[in-house]
Image (cartoon, rainbow over all chains, first blue to last red):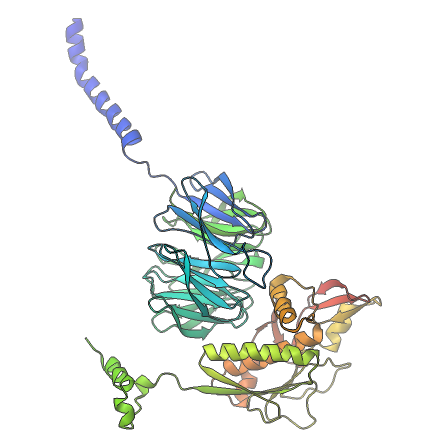
Length: 338
Length: 233
């Protein structure tokens, strides 16, 4: 076999190999790799945000943000993480009370917003234009215009408001209040409270189903989760979770499950969203408070405030697959694009 | 497309139906409800707690489009809160705030917000260096700090156990009235039997069906007034 003939015979192989190399190079360097999202965990006592890579479940960064970070949300475009901060003087609004925005690329604080005194939980509109924050001691919900960096409304809601949830269509904001055991409904078009209803004792948080037809409200002392008809803003039923202290709540992206952080119950309750049946009660770290689910629905993260860590649940097996150290007083968790 | 409901609402808004003397149920919204609670407390610590709770209850009722009326007499329709219950059988639910020294005969419509003598005795055990309290101004967990702060901010004084009992009694009275639409005393009493309350103690509080005392965590306090221990039953 001549060298030429040999080269000629090898040529088709080389072409295939070259094509494969090209394709790999194209995929690696031309097409953006679908990176796993990051989980952002607020640490109330440490004054930091822990950044976790959800692909490896390893800590990839810690950001100092200021005093008492609690509520935390990622913007829909994934470019910003918002964190509620508050100073230790609950009586009056002080310089430490704010919602700050982190740039997710640089992990630096790039903006600071007035959100009333002692902001705790909050919701961010999908277009990123409005922040709705609960002000526990003032008994109000503050609406902040993000672009103008200005408070546009302070609405009287129940006593000791905490949980804030925005409906998927952006029309309604539910604000829970711990002492009055109420949920106040804000019409975002009018910036007014248009309805309020009673739920079980010490409501902590609320979450809407992806289709917006239902909302779920936890009651820490009631030991229940209430199912709300969001067209009428009325309680349909209250689901008892034995031995629980429900606080954080999140609905799976497909709307089929509800995950409830059980606070002092040190577990996550998994409910069937259609039937309300308790599917599992999974032990996690100590005092899980905030809870979030990845956008593909495959993993659930809890911020555990007493064990200062994050538990990761596999949605398929309902087992804890990782425990990740966080800062002192881990409080909230939000998941967004890298 | 305008629905019949929207048409009726717009007509009512324009005053057309009102001028005709027509009040369509569809457009009238919820019927305003009134709940009445009688406060029979002297202006001491318990009275301060009760007053604060009454204002909070009035705010809650307002959100729910219910009017809360406070009376200073025994004629309340729904519930009365007082130091001790009157001798005659109450026509309404009566919530007492003063602790009993010893067990007393159970009266069907009288409920005690203080922990029972038996609870206090069990919590104390053999100790003689402490006493039992239903609340302490230094409590911080389970939202106790928020409640203590609200009271201190309002009265520039610590929330002691008497103040907490006054606050809790009115909270319970208002909540049972708000959650029982019918409002008849029998309905209130039936609702009360299964209701659970949040007293900022981190536990579900409810009335013992046997002795009508509020079952609750209590606290051991030393002679200097320092909080020593929480006791949960």
